[in-house]
Length: 511
Image (cartoon, rainbow, N blue to C red):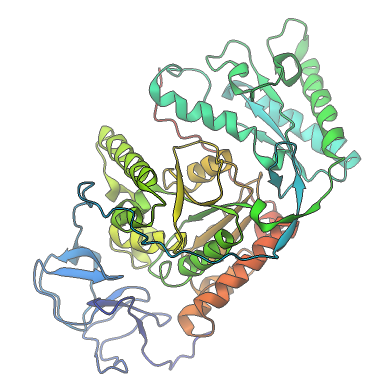
């Protein structure tokens, strides 16, 4: 808890910044004076910006050393830089972007770190041992959920080495233009979800029979449709009870195999970690995301795979990303995904400004530019080794940009399809977000959130803002916790069994 009489504090991110955020819990009242002599002339809420100098109309407003907007009216020194005073700039052009030039820091190797994971035949390593029942169409979702209740009650107790059984249900599969170019995204997402390393290579698909997305399209190469697929419309099945029994028996055969798996000591290089932020605030780019960025660097140094995503939340930082690309091909791929998403938004008569939420703004973020500058920090400082289109499976080590929408649920689903086996989620406003297929570690940007949600937040990065810890301290804490969680330690979301439904990204037309 911050003392009631705590001295006024602000956080300035860069020497060139002409605004800073108020750090004090509850904000500050007019007349509050900072150590530098700056005096507030109006009340400023916690996390919101105060003008460090007079800013004239149309002059640039700088935070993180970047232009986050232009003043809609004159802003006096010591006043609250309200959202309405910040005119959002145009998105950076894709022309004349900085070229790959060694802008990323070359990170020294980090050796000797391991975790206890589940080795798979394809060389991947899971952090959990789960049976997934995939579905080809929403029509069968209710039946699969019904069968799932039986499986958990009747079968799971027989197989103590299996963590869970989950249903990969979705709203896709029929009533869609299956051959449209945009349909490639949800189809490959479903194909790759079935191959997630936490599922141990045991593929099981339940279909209806008449859907446009025929179940065979979801099978990994080399697998038999006769063995891995059941169709509810199969004429050999009589009645609902027999259909459910068939699903239960298919599950039983796979649970027997999964139950034989045991954790083994694996190098940290076998981890595939997805990073995301949600319910962001002005502290996200000050505490939790920089700490996660430090942990991402540690993972890259250890040889692991780390994915950052959320196109609209890095779009305004494209000029900071292309210099970090490992080569020109990676830089071009970054631009390709950003440009594709620009066109996607334009087709819906929207733009990147639609991203910012009421909660983001209440937490001090004026617009998507400011949000993006804080979001991209979680990618750390290392070179960007590769780029994935939505739903593609990762096949290389290092820092990867996996292009996804910023929606928490869609992003999480796509990172799962890309092969994520552990998820780290930073939040300023708070969220109970969780995924059934992978453990989710939640990191708070402020200590107040951790204190209120002491049994939902796993790591408090707010100690960075109060000076009780450094970015490096919290970064190492996150890194070590990732290894522990990958080895079986429960997160709070797992403890409470909090999970969100998967949500496919479908840019294709619905018929």
